[in-house]
Length: 234
Length: 390
Image (cartoon, rainbow over all chains, first blue to last red; front, side, top):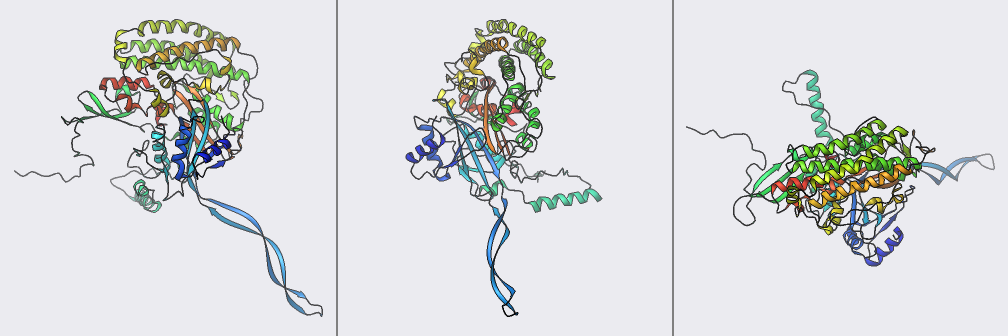
């Protein structure tokens, strides 16, 4: 099999402006991957399947990964000018600008995203795996990616599962419904910030402690604002 | 007399208009086969629309057994998921163990000693034999031969499960493999007992085949039913005996040479028509090839350690990175995809379940056939719901 870099070159030659990025994998498995731009993903995937030499006709595995917002703390050296009072030549105190270098701790939030990962093999040429991945713009309202089901049927149930558990909306999927959870279910259980439901059960004659629990449950339902599948789809 | 109208709201879809048959004559009958249908091997539902006896639509419904295995595994240490993999495809716990161990070994760059590789091959091939035997037994059961053929298969399976029990302590939930080897060593008496069981297997397959392969009812019910074309099979990610019955020469033991499979002489049986009969026949022939592998492995097994000396049992933290490892499980390609962030738990743990993905083309295979054939086609896919729903 061609190396992942060579495949990247081949893609760029065949699909102009593909926007493919090489993602290195430091683990001993050395399964490097290619990150596709969602706009050109369908064209690139079609090329990967139909090219005679590559012939990735077998889509083995489709899965999602959640990368939540990450707070990054870094220490930066900053040089700034401060005014200091120093002893003057004639014994008087005078103010003088002095440059000094201090270490500053800076925090910023790297925005999170959802990722869809595809593992491709070739039955024709018996090689693989080639890992391709796509990122959504964010985790909240722009979680759509192009579906690769029209190219590989194998993605049909697996993309449904990724939609069900992660909330990635695959545009162009023929039948995008929940698959493992029930249709009325809200929220996406595989996300890292998913909160499990409390063990609340309705009681017909609530009193004292039970009443307190009912109130807590109601507050939680309203306050937490479970992610709504329909709202996300709009 | 006044008619009191019910105030309660009817659920959505209550008053659906009748579905008209494609030819415009008559109404389609919608049947929910399952989740308590005896042919569904557990809790699985097929929403079928019938025109007379003919299937015009079939939508599988999953999730009755869903417990989010992947989420649970992401909250536990790597080794803590090993017993849980037994519960995926509970017919083949040892191959599940192997697939998971293989993926982690790839992630951590962990070598496996030779003796452990031989033990893994022996156990995996025993698993394959008992899985194929019982899956054929279930298939015949669904054809209406209640009990007897299944019990023939289970009689043989029981001998293999006894071997598993004496080695691992459990018949089905074996929890035997570790990252970099196996949990306990096999003993000389166990090897002798295994050789005895393996020596008896060819006679079992001969008898099984003599009773079934040319059976008139089996041929009438299976030949030409549920045909799967090779192009569709590859495109839909179908793997295992299903794929090979459609004539596609793709066996991960031959393609990836994982473990030590390149040392053994064995052939890959292929089907010609891709119907139920070919799937049955491929499974029978795969049992024969597995017996060949078993005989070679039992002859060549070397002495030595069963765990790599540098394997870390406690405080196992692979370096950041990811790996996808897969094996040829009896039902198809079983893969594990792991992402490590350097911590004691996997950041992402994904099971690639062959049972679920082989069901993608269930509707394509069933369209135009009778309801009774749906049961057979479904049975010939060979699934286990523990793996489909995870």
